[in-house]
Image 1 (cartoon, one colour):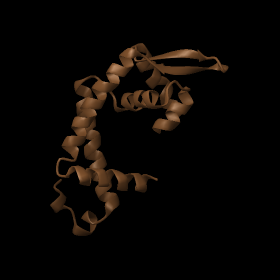
Image 2 (cartoon, rainbow, N blue to C red):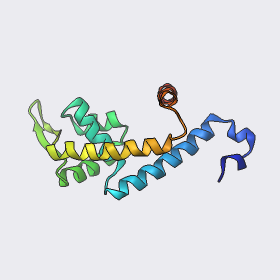
Image 3 (spheres, rainbow, N blue to C red):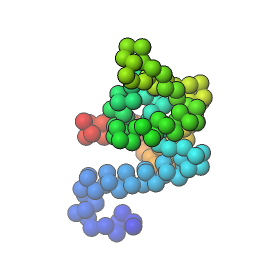
Length: 143
């Protein structure tokens, strides 16, 4: 569907435009990740570990907005691929700490590079200043 084919009243609704932009972004991200056998949530988890350091499965899920029912399987994939390691938490033996491996750090760089290219494609019609403004505005909308 072309944007100009939609009714003007619909095109004027930010919620509709955000939804259409999100659908396009998800499609582009999915295609880009498939090319390197990656997943967007791998990027989120690995990025959280780089920024915040080793943490519990629960806290990583909270930081990334990933439902706890999905985190176990996602971390299982990353562990199996050698990108993260689970180790007992010395402060609480009932839980594990999730730690980024060297291989995970390299994987994050590859995923980040691919996602940066997707952002460039998605936002090609915007100047760098407009991209920054869009990010700031969307962050305010998301809350």
